[in-house]
View (spheres, helix red, strand yellow):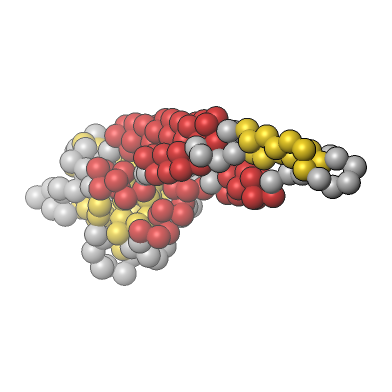
Length: 211
C-alpha cells in the first residue's frame, strides 16, 4: 500500500494555478476601436485606454501608470512635432505628466528573474512507502522530483516572461511618439505612458499658431 506526500501535491497545485508568467498581447494601435474625436484647429485626435492584460494590466494599476494609444490626424498643410508644437492635455486643461518610453517599460515589465525563486523547490522529494498486512512499514522511497520541477518551472517562466517583455518593448519603441513628426495630411499612431490613476479625457493642442 502506498501513501502520497500531501505537501507535494499542495505545492504542485499552487504552482499550476497561480504562478505563471504572462504572454504579451500586441496592441496594434491601428486596429483599435477608438472613441470620440477631439479637434484643435486642423488636428484631430482619438485615444484609447485599457490596452494591457494579465500581469501587465496589474502592473499598470499598481504603478499608477496608464498606457494610452493615440490616433492623430493632421489635416493642415504643415507638419507638427508631438511634444513640441503639438502637446497633449486633459480635457479640463490640466497638464499631462508623461513617463518616457523607457520608464514605461521599466515600470510595467515582468520581473523575469523573480521566477528563479522556484529553484528553492529543488530539494523537494516525493515520498512513497509500503506496509505489510499488519501495518508495519517495509520500504520507503524518496524520489527527488524537485531536481526536475525547480529548474524546469524556473526556466520555463523566465523565458516566457523575457520573450513577453521583448515584445512589449519592441511595440513601445515602434510607436514612440515623443518628438515624432506628424506630417501634413497624414495620420500617426502612437503609445504613451501617462502618470495617472484616472482615465481622464484627453485632447491635443497646437502650441503655436501658424503666424
